[in-house]
Figure 1 (cartoon, one colour):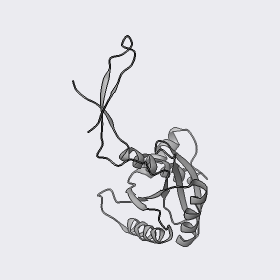
Figure 2 (cartoon, helix red, strand yellow; figure 1 turned 60 degrees about the horizontal axis):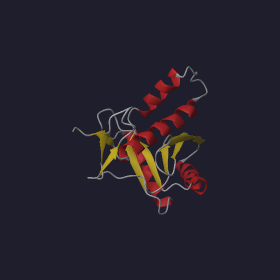
Figure 3 (cartoon, helix red, strand yellow; figure 1 turned 180 degrees about the vertical axis):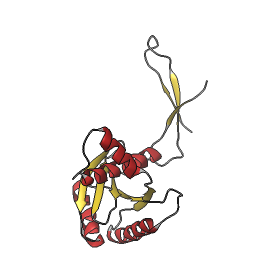
Length: 174
């Protein structure tokens, strides 16, 4: 495991040693596209090339899975993403209910259509609730803004994913 010594001006702060986790995957592969799946509205978010920043792209309104997949795949020409993650709406207990099964079927279709782009799922429990909470905290009204919730849910999903793959810097005890 590698170590980095990070120190500042000794008169202002003490030096710290941080442990860098070398056993966790990183996002060296480029941009990641996050998909918050819905039957009619799909929220999208994209990472920066370094996997540091998650930005909501917006919401696409679709009539069926074929249209949804075509639009998601078409985003690659603009954003040049290297991976797609799709939120899997597990039940609170962690079981895969009917909606999770529908999303799993959608993911399989997306994998067949995305060529060499890997498609993964990530547990999205509570991302919509978190998006609603953040939306209400901002003081905005929900009426007519469901697309904003889907975009924000995709952004939260992507942030969770990026956090899960980033090396953690933890203070080491001396």
